[in-house]
Amino acid sequence: MNDAVIVLPGIMGSELVEVSTGRTLWGMADAGWYARAWTTGASLRALAVTAEERSGRAGRIRATRLLHAPAWAPMLRGFEPYTGLVQAVRRSAADPSAVLEFPYDWRLSVEYNAGLLAIAAYEHLRRWRRHPMGGPDARLVLVTHSMGGLIARYFTEVLGGSAELRALVTMGTPFFGSVKAVHLLGTGTGAPLPLPHARLRRLATTLPGLHDLLPSYHCVDEGSSVRRLTAADVAGLGGDAHLADEAFARRERLLGTGSWETLWPSIGVAQPTMQSLVLRDGVAEPRFVTCRTDPTGRIERIDRGGDETVYREAACPAAAKPFAFVQTHGALPGTREAIAQVCAVLDHRDLGPELGADATPLSLDTADSVPAGTALDIVIGGVPDPAALDVRVVDVATGAVLPRALPVSRDGRLTVRQILPVEGLFRVLAKVDGQSAVTQLVLASDPSARFDPAEDA
Image (cartoon, rainbow, N blue to C red):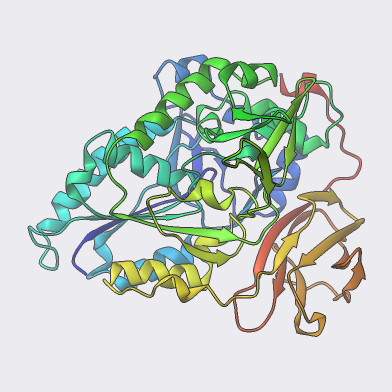
């Protein structure tokens, strides 16, 4: 494979540094930092997008590298590092220098970051074509996760990069958006929220990048009909109507041009995933079903699942055939099976959709955070034989495996109740057979912390 490769992470998948001070604002290696940041708020205020940044004068914050350690945010949950993916891509490339990591400021818009990607991509391709292992026929392969796929698509189809593209590999990219983005904006201005969730909501309302993830498919369930979300809806939920309008326009541009022939989408499946919503009294109430209109005009509500953040059809245009893997959104790019599919594309091998077809559809459902010292309920679905199930909880900071609790059957599903003893990040792993463990990151927070709106003003 003599092509030039660029790896793009998802939202919150890049380390961010404040230029004036050199202070790292996001992407710390210290897992305990996330517990402190989301409860004290002091480390998060600088991440809010300013009026100057919204007007196009960016540069206050710089993206330095892809995540090298796990990260966590409420509702958006955990983000695993990209180290394993990048290492595998480098091994598949003709030379390690063929691979470029592209961190970006995920707070800002898809359009802004696509412009920076265009500059970096053409320069990387120019250098690689001069390399002895490259050559004039080398083209671009873009390997992306989540929001990174939207940036790559905007670059190729709106900014003209498709002329140099051989393949766009996406993992969990919300081509049609995610209801979860609405949910975290629309939990209600007066609703009592856990402390980390309240902080994320205040931050999210300022972020063009987060508004770029709003759903553009028919997802607003009105009982006898279903419609698309509007900018007015977003404003009514407490979001920014102008940012929403701009985001929907960008989505139309990146979806409405070009072909999908070079797309290789991977999607996560079998996880409980928000797919539609009901708007009520300034609150977005999520629903875990997709609304479809049958030929008679009747609304059908079907659970299509997804990767816990992006429902399966939203991650794959109808013109493309996805590769499905039983995994959560943040863990998908580090999963052995998904990495094997990426390398197959790079090596011009077709492993086919059967790569994940025989996997047990194990689902993992947990709270995203609990107070330290209290119990976390880990709910498992899709496992026919409880004896084949292996559930572990690991302290991310120390690597220590917590004493295992046995699953019990509750309401037809298996539940493991695990005490998270101290503040910090914990990785939940649920595994059956020989397939990769389905994983989720959970925060154990300070049980005494309380949200003071004046603190974050």
